[in-house]
Length: 152
Ligand code: SF4
Image (cartoon, rainbow, N blue to C red; front, side, top):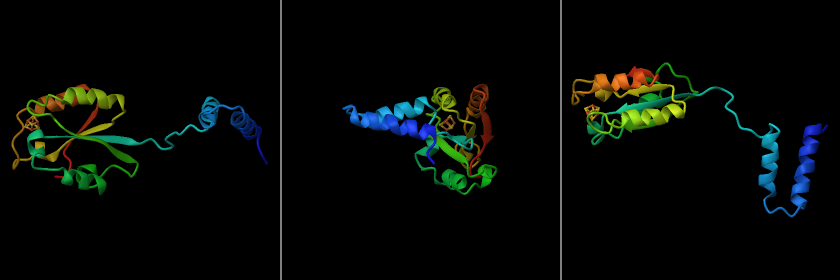
């Protein structure tokens, strides 16, 4: 049986289609949105993670290890469920991590939940990051959860 909402939507749709309006579909969606129908919502909250990595190392590393660990939910990503997305993967911008503050501001607006510092920023067989403490502080000051490491 057709509900009254479905009937009224159908009526409006018919009117739109016969009104000579050259954008009937758009008009129908406008009506649906106003009435709470057709709005796409996330049913489950998504955990959004991002990775900051070393700009110097990025010249030789495409980031495969970080992505493999994330995709397999291993190492420092093991506690995330399937409802987790990698929303950003970016370099610090070079010493002294000059891009991080600006990019975190942007990511915060987009609801990022956790920032990982890549393993290469912290491992001994990579160039030692002389700014790691300031970088950590920048993340913490932004009020975003920090995890040290990705795939090691
Ligand atoms: S600030 Fe650290 S992570 Fe960034 S390029 Fe310099 S050494 Fe690498």
